[in-house]
Length: 377
Image (tube, rainbow, N blue to C red; front, side, top):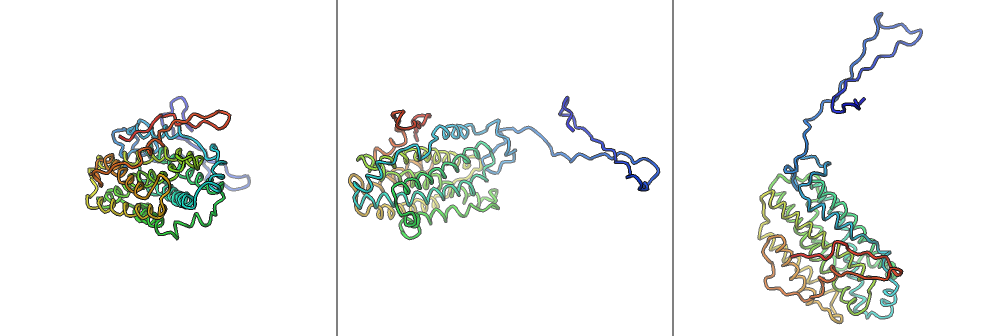
């Protein structure tokens, strides 16, 4: 029992053995002595020094949140919670009419395949953070933001499902396209191959080869998968929105995009911290292979969804914007630009994450991102 007057003083508890049952002969004439209960041996208990924390390979108590070593990670968590919303907050009524009565066959093709790619990718992202990345973090402030990130990826998946269901699309067809359309499947297979190698629970990040592989996988996930493929992946729907079409879906994607901007930014910050703490840099040749492979996959994907350009948007616009965004992510990581001189072709894309909305209170719930505009550079 704890000594409530002085809880820091250990207490040795004694218990008196019960007397022998009536009618049963005692094993000894003497009274049974009291038995002392031994307290379990305690480990060396010391307060956590935040300077001892590390992103990975840390030896401090993973259950102790503060003092923070990475206060910026806690700020990411607080900002993420300010962008709280659900797909039910946004009206999709006009989108139903637009899809069935205003979109051309080419525009329906774009809309359906963008949703098909995004919904599969967000499930993959959710699993990667929850199963491959989060458990490797050895500072709780990092894990707490990533727990929120796992929730947000599932929320995004719900959002795509809500759009698919509301429009009345064939769910079996939409969800299977990533398995049967090579241009969609190609991006998913690259992600699976690059991320599956770090899904193992027994990975030893003190081994320099394993650490390098983990760093490359994390750079791919934050810099390309979320930072380029997701960020650029919403733009075909935003192109429709700019012409007054599918505005409900586009608004859903705007809230998702705000989440993804934070996801990619956080991942890049973590990757840079790993490089600093572990004194490691990604192999330039491996980076070149990553950029080349991912660009080829993005070009094939754009060629499929935009095989016939839609008004105001083409395959060339999509691929050139991808290269420009890839350069930005590389600079954020402190790495060489893969496409020197690439220029933006969608000057309006960044506005989608920064747009401040003013709505009639009686029409919809205001879900403003209270942290204000998001800025990469």
